[in-house]
Amino acid sequence: MSGTGLAFYLTTLLVYGAVDVIACLGLNQQFGVAGVTNFGYIIFQAAGAYTAATLSLPSQSANGGFQTYIGGLGLPFPVPWIGAMIVGGLLALPFTFLVGRRLRGDFVAIGLLVAAVMANLLVTNFRPFLNGAAGLALVPAPLHSVLDPQSLSYQWGYSAVAILLAAGTYWFCRRMTESPYGRTLRAMRDNDEVADSLGKNLRMLRAQMLVIGGMIAGLSGGVLVGFITLWAPSAWGYAETIVLFAAVIIGGAGNHAGAILGAILVPLGFEEASRFIPAFGPAGLIPALQWVAIGLLIVLFLWFRPQGIIPERRRTTPAAPEKAPSTVQFAVHPRWGPAQAATGLEADAGAGIGEAVLEARDLSRRFGGVDAVAQVSLALSRGRLTGLIGPNGAGKSTTLAMLAGTLPASGGSVWLDGRDITSVPAYCRARLGVVRTFQLASEFKRLTVMENLLSAVPQQRGESLRGALLGRRYWAADEGVSIERAWDMLDGFGLRAQADEYAGDLSGGQRRLVEIMRALMAQPEVLLLDEPMAGVHPKLATEIGQHLIELCHSGMTIGVVEHELAFMDRFCDPVVVMAQGRVLAAGTMAALRQQPEVVEAYLVG
Ligand SMILES: Nc1ncnc2c1ncn2[C@@H]1O[C@H](COP(=O)(O)OP(=O)(O)OP(=O)(O)O)[C@@H](O)[C@H]1O
Image (cartoon, rainbow, N blue to C red; front, side, top):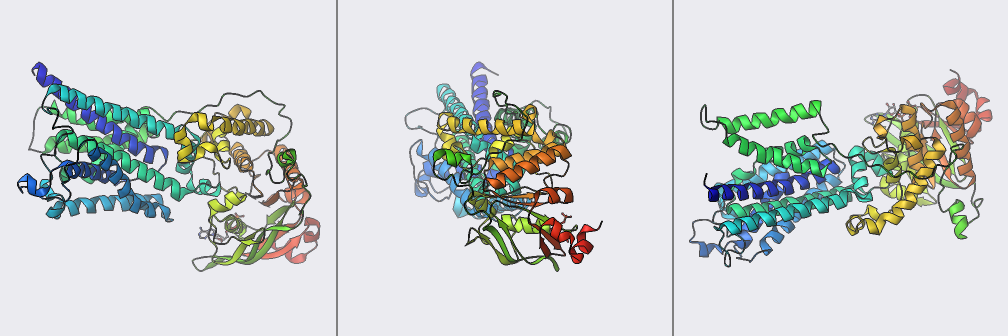
C-alpha cells in the first residue's frame, strides 16, 4: 500500500471507529446503564443517515432522476447532522408509549426488533420513499462546495471532527451516568419495581433514554453517511444491532470506556480482521463465519465474563468521621420529626396521633379465579405501629402491595389523608410519602450499599436529566447532605464497613437491613414493611423494633407484615389478623389471643 493509500485507509478506519464508538455509547447508555433493551437500535442510526442524506441531497428533479426520495433540500453543513440527531430522537417518541405501558422488558425488546424489521422491509420495498433496496448514492459530503472531499487533508479533517464528536458523546454520557440521575437509571435497571416504589418515574426515565439513545444513534448515522456518501437497507439489517450489542456486552455493559473498547474490537475489529483472512470456500462464507464468531463471542462472554472486559466501575464514597455505633439512628419525615422542629415550622409531633392516615376500603384483588384479597377494610393510624398477621397465603403481602400501589386493586379504594389515591401510581404514592419494602430480597444488586441508600432520597437536585447535565457543581452540596445522613444510618445499623460493597454481595440479613435503611432514607410519612425481620439477628430485630416505635412517637405511620409473633406482642398495636383474603379480627395481641376463631385460624401452631 502506498503512503497515500495507507493514509486514506487510516482515515477511513478512524471515521468508522468514531461512528461505532458514538453508536455504542448511545446503546450502552440505554442498555448497559438504564437496562432498556432496544433490539431496534439500528433503525435510529438508519433514520439519522437517511435524514442527513435527504437534507443534503439536491431535490429529486436536480439529480437526473436516477434515484427517488423524499426531501432533497440541499441544506448546508451542519444542518443535515443536526437534523439526523433530531429525527433519531423523534423516531423514538412512538416507542416511549411501549416502554410506558406495563409491558415486560423482553416484550418491549421484541416489539422494537419487530419494528426494526418492518422499517427495513418498508424502506426496501417502497421505492418512492428512499429509493428502495438500491438505497441513496452520491450524498454530498459536508462542505463539498468549499473543500475537496477527495483530498487527504479533508479526510483527516473529517476523522478529527468524527473523533471530537465521539469524545463529546462520551463526555455527555458520563455526565449523565456519574450523577444521581445515573444512579437512578442503574437502580431502575437492577429492579424496576423497587425503583417505582421509591418514587422513580420509570416511564419518563425510559422515554428519556430512548430519545437520547435515538439522538446519539441518529448522529452516528449522519456522520457515517457524510463520509461514505451512500446508504441502503442492506447497511442496517437487524443483525447490525446484534453487532452493537456484542460490542457493548464484550467491552463491558454499563461502563462507557468498555463501550468504546467494544466498538473498536467488535464492529471495527471484525471487519478489519476479515480483510486479512485469505479467501476460501464459496462466496459469502467469510462474512457468514463472521456472524458465527460474533454469536459465539456473545455466548462465551455472557457465560464466563458477563461483566465484559472492562466491568462497570464500583462507585466508592469518601468515608465520613465515624460515630458511636451503639444505637440505630433513624431519619424521620421532615413533616413530623426533629428536622421540622428545628425549623420551627411544626414541632408538634403529637398532632393527629391516632387518626387514620392510610386506609383500605373494601379492597379486593383477584388472581385468575382466586380471591387473594376480598373486601378488606383496615386503617393505619398516625403514630401507630400496626401489625398484619395471618397464615401463609392469607393475602397480607397483596394488601400491602395494593396500599403502596405496586399492585393494582381489582376493587375497593385506598385513601391517604382523606384523599382517594386508588388510581395514583406507585411512584406518585411514594412521592406522597407512602414507601414500602418487599418480602423477597429487593436490594439494587449492582449498586453499593451507600448507593442503595442514596437512591431513595426524595427531591435530589441531581436526579433530573437537567440537574445531571448542569454538572456536579449544581448537585454536589445537596448530595453531600444525603451522604451525611446515609453515614449516620449506616452507623446506626452497624453496616458502615459495608458501605462500598455491592448490596447483592451481602448476607440475607444484611440485605434486609439495607432495604429498611433505604426505605427510611425516603423519609416516608407511611412506612409499609413486608417481613422486615426475616433473617435479621434477634438482638438487632429488637433494636429495630424499638426504633420503629420511636419513629411512631415522632408521628410516622407504620404497617408491618411479620410472622414473628414475639415481635407483634412486643411492638405492634393494633394487630390485624387476616385469613383467606379477609380481615378476621383486629386489636391488641392480648385481646386477639382471647378470640377462639383467631386462635384457631392462626395463633395455634
Ligand atoms: N402474582 C400472583 N399471581 C397469582 N396468585 C397470586 C399472586 N400473588 C399472590 N397470589 C396468591 O394470592 C394469595 C395471597 O398471597 P399473599 O402473598 O398476599 O399472601 P401472604 O398472606 O402474604 O402469604 P405469606 O405469608 O406466605 O407471604 C395466595 O393464594 C397466593 O398464591
